[in-house]
Length: 290
Length: 134
Image (tube, rainbow over all chains, first blue to last red; front, side, top):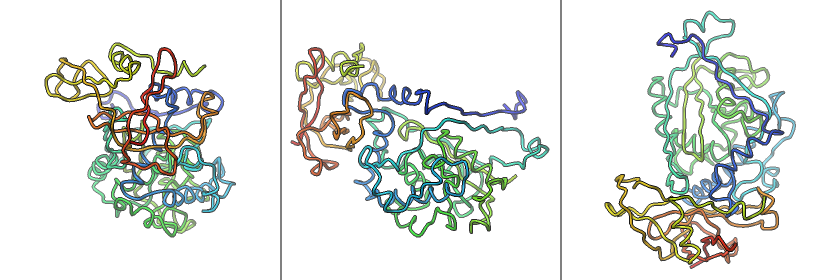
């Protein structure tokens, strides 16, 4: 639309009173309407089924997810508006957290939040004239392996992330080595693992080792979900990861800003993801400093 | 909302399946053209788009593709049922059903474990196909 001159600016918004409105619970309930008689509700059970299959197929599990949940919590501690930032999540805290839908503990599950985010998309030329530093969408990819989720064989990957990630990197003409940080849609800790795995950061089941030693944390070689993400900052669907990627590339992230102050690479290229349903759709963006 | 409000509401496509359950029979649509046994039920074969269909009965045997143990009730009707097991069971004939695993200690659960159908008459109108170790 921007290219065709139909419009000059596109505002993409997400806002929800999910905590007190109950709309989120209603939407999730509708998702599993036919399975309610079996006590199967919403997205937690669906992703837990996927995670369990992944444990069986490539040997992942809570040991891997703890590194994701605790790593993101460290970023949240640097973000004054994060919901969970003041509550540390050490390894023992993770394993003490109540089981919600085994194999998921409460701390493997994203927050429910009141609030919102918005981004404005325009041409690169216009963006450079505006008050805020420009960020460029230099690649995008989408893959929707959507079908009745009960019939899906991709719960343990490859999910839509594999093709979407490859397309986005190709369009941007960069490789994973050029990526400075990732903002991954993290409805659950396992979603982060399977997305990074399908993007090619590590092989199936190698996530636990890859994450060891704080890879995704402040000071790590591949920072992930630097606001705390949906697990520890707030849940605004795909706009939690995208907005954070944009703010990081603009250098507007305060104490958690990527670069010397968090002993990380100053970001030039950030990979951001979104997914929908139970791993039924996936979008990947490569964003670059403008 | 009571438990009966949570039971499936059969539509034109799914009615034969749920009627079959009341008779303790697992009935699936089989494409009369290409032989695909489909689930969920629908008007068209997802593989060849034929509308010609016959019904076949499953032997009720399969394996657990994946499972989850609910420790938190996500609905008040399940408050006194936790912890309980929801699973995807892959039937020998192909369809994969979201269901419950019953009569199985949770520590014995495993993906790919053989199971067989176990009928649960939850009300006059509704029987649910659940599964137990084979």
